[in-house]
Image (cartoon, rainbow, N blue to C red; front, side):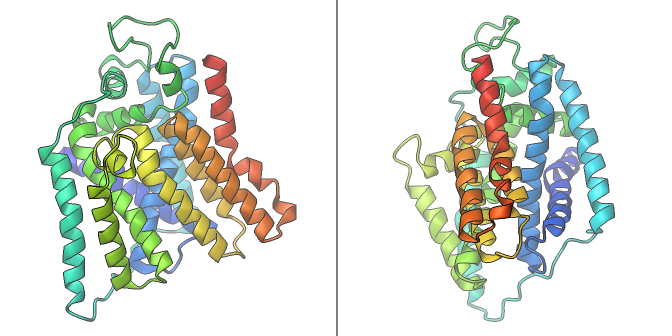
Length: 350
């Protein structure tokens, strides 16, 4: 069990952190920001790894290759790119200095925030089990994990299919559940356990990590106001359910589903990139971050392909027009190219 936990920490923690640190240095994003920068590196690195998985896996699904091919290819590409980035940008120690809390009552705000978020994580991990839609979502991860095939077994009757049919058509260009199976293979934990018990707590912390960065931006790095902002956001999410498609429902009920991850994490993350892009007008490389974000959106669901592409298109277009970067207009279609490509793939196989 200890070995599995160490491997899990490496796969979902250390590798994304160093990936994000190296890419962020190359793009000159969130530099010299201390602990806040480290949080961004981790989140951005996770987004980049999701994008890599999207690029290498979808062609293999269309070619009906074994799942292990996707695991090996993702692993090789990830390691080679990481070693290359670390060698170029030398981000061997991405950790910044922690925030110094000077006034004792600020600890109360931190404790309040951690109690609210900790309660939600506890409920997710230990007190809740909802398996709605598992016959489509989690079964896809289980198929890859146990049968070494990708979306070729009918989820209802278990028969081998010659082509992609029904809901599978939507999942081919957005194989998020296969990424959960990938983690399961790497750390030797069954994907059902990962999807329902282990990963929801981690993903929930990532969601509030994005909201922390948004609060840090809105309140100009004011620690107290950012704590209050995240605490209030957590309470709103906790008590504003009321419908299967609200932010609260996606975040606290079924975050393992791709469309929920898109709504809960990636929409706020794209907004964060856009806001910083507007603040650092002299930086002309933010479109690459938007490209990575759009790739991750495409991995999550068909909604991510369409809505994520629309948001990316708007953000990139606004950057060009508002800052009069007419010579860089080519970055607009390039930033949302993933949505165009995977949208065409969906139309072709449907």
